[in-house]
Image 1 (cartoon, rainbow, N blue to C red):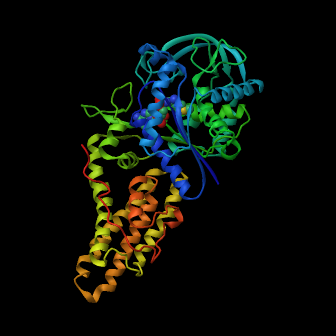
Image 2 (cartoon, protein in one colour):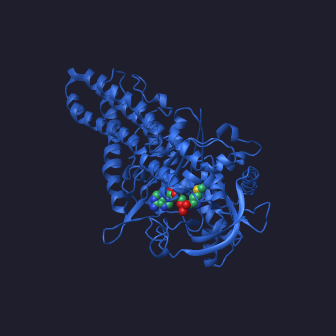
Amino acid sequence: MAFYVTTPIYYVNAAPHLGHAYSTIAADVMARHMRQRGEDVFFLTGTDEHGEPVALAAEKEGVSPQVLADRNAPRFRDLMPRLNASNDFFIRTTDAEHGAKVQEILTTIRDNGHVYEGTYEGWYCPRCADFKTDAEAGENHTCPIHRIALTREKEDNYFFRLSAFQDDLLRLYDEQPDFVMPRHHYNEARSFVAGGLQDVSLSRATLSWGVTVPWDPGHVFYVWFDALLNYYSALSYARPGEDLTQRFWPAQFHLIGKDILKFHTVFWPAMLMAAKLPLPEHIFVHGFLLMRDDAGEEHKMSKSLGNVLDPFAAIDEFGTDALRYYCMREVSFGHDGSVSAAGFAARYESELANDFGNLASRIIAMVHRYRGGTVPDAAPDAELAAELDAMAGEICALLDRADLSAALDAAWQRVRRLNRFVEEQAPWTLAKDEARAGELDSVLSSLAEGLRVVAVVLHPWLPESTEKLLGALGAPEIALDRARVQPGRLGAVARLDPLFPKPHG
Ligand code: MSP
């Protein structure tokens, strides 16, 4: 089965921060998990380089938008391998192939009768690149997200007849209650549509940084129409000489932050309907990473508020797996949650180093101490094996609905279960009594196999350390059908350095 997952494409107006890394890590967990299931996966991420957010930042720095984009896009591209993201392609909306596809699809939308000329008059946030209705504008016509004054815009441009799609969108929402997930964001999106839709600007005449409108070259397309189409255009040129559109479109999951819900849950399906293209299956809306200020109040982590955690610095100190784990563990996926350097260090210590790292070190050390480094070929504890065997199925069901937090928790329960098993069985006591050698064999085989099974399942979250661990266990296969207790699977095991050593603070 084909599985296509995307992240938002990131504005290149500044350096990446942890909020950007967050969406990418989440999509990567899903992509890796689906590959473990043997699915045909395509995972896309990239950068959004046109429009006012980038043009304004370039102006401030005294360079052209292209120079700024060329300077900043590699910072996002380079973040991907640092995060160990397994993206199959990195799209830049300044790619010529993308621009040509945008022109093609929007011309189709026009040919289908959904575009007209008109005058826009109203409020606009240049940082969101969003035309705000009175209801969306904050106090005194400010942007509720960026807290800057909205500008009053009046310009002649082309409009997309969004209002004509209200009924079709409501039908979509009624027929596919999992089109937008989780439920609270579905409700938000549906009520936005039910509240009535206004037509939206499709082009801008006052801006030159964008994809040229082919039927009126004095205009560029409004950046959101250009940006949303990345999900579709990338498939047509990601592999030179090959068009992957048939194979992967429509996408199974677009993962997005809740700040861009309206564009993805209203504009995007309407655009696809207007172009007569199939709709994505699910749009999963995650929450914000928040930071507390000195007064203890929580704010969205964002460049404009200046309260960002640098993912590169966190990786230097704790490693990539730790960052992936922390982001996925600390904040319930689909909700907002606070993050902090102190919280990161605490989870690193108590969960990665203690729960998981020490478990691995102890088990391997006991196999060496008591059985010369070879896992005994003995029947494992049946109850423990049953609990471990149930895990992969649970995790598949949870990840089918992008419940990344519950899935990670289901795996972590087993890590803790194995720790309890060590304490309950006290192999060090069994080892003192020759008559109980058979019991010790069974305990060691249960633990080593349990460790292997847990490592297979945790691989999408912790790719680097689980690979190291599975290598030491002499069982590198990560296909999910390996996540079952197989007596006799393991033999000689290698010694293992601590998986989560003291950080390089
Ligand atoms: N370029 C648009 C998206 C176009 S998609 C067709 C954009 N870019 S952005 O760089 O401003 O933000 C993109 C995404 O980054 C957000 O939707 C969200 O997924 C992620 N995040 C940015 N800050 C975040 C947090 N503080 N917390 C969680 N995610 C955040 O909007």
